Length: 272
Ligand SMILES: [Zn+2]
Image (tube, rainbow, N blue to C red; front, side):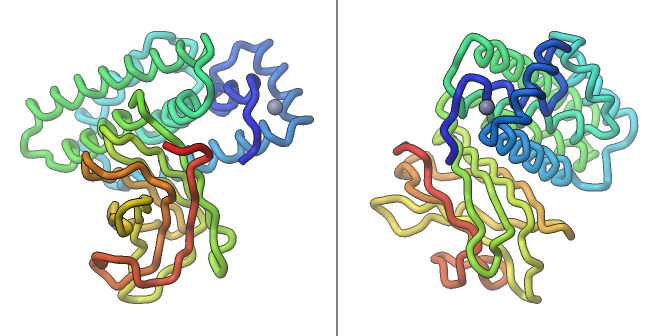
């Protein structure tokens, strides 16, 4: 893990295109000479891309989609929203998600507080959109499913107890990387990229490793054709704090305890 410093809190807003022009130019110049911030920008971009890919190709009927999107776009600062020029709901949300991820992962300066307030407002709007989607489109299970998934993801990212755990690819999946965003109350959002294609009959399984229990299965991860994937997992409310998160290759359907090779492993930067 690279050491974090004040400028790094701007990385997400930079990826989002939400900085003022002077801020943007100043941060761009800073990134050119700062490997920590350059790495943070790259990492956020990967997570944003993976999140964008995580929403199914098949979108809800246009009017449902328009309502959800309109609700999300009605964010407090037009200036922040306009650079999205969203081509899809996922692309519209991805930068917000990465902002939230960074906000909670860095020290809470005044800037970060402001960004978290925006995420919380966005969360409330998604909740509202979901309620309306449910009421109006009870039979449109896809719209409901997507809305719930977005809401669950935002709930984790806005959690007051959120922690970030970065995972590194293990041989022979050295190019793979992952990031777990963990909240005891609200579950875990897990994003991975560059995972190798799986042999037939095998799945990726995500594990929460604690100091006091055998590894707890968080769930299964289905990467897309490019090896990226994002999932929201519920975890038991009484689970011990994770000392590591790992991903293994397991038989289809998953297993109660890990048996296969580890492809991703990461530990929290500080004890949770
Ligand atoms: Zn820097």
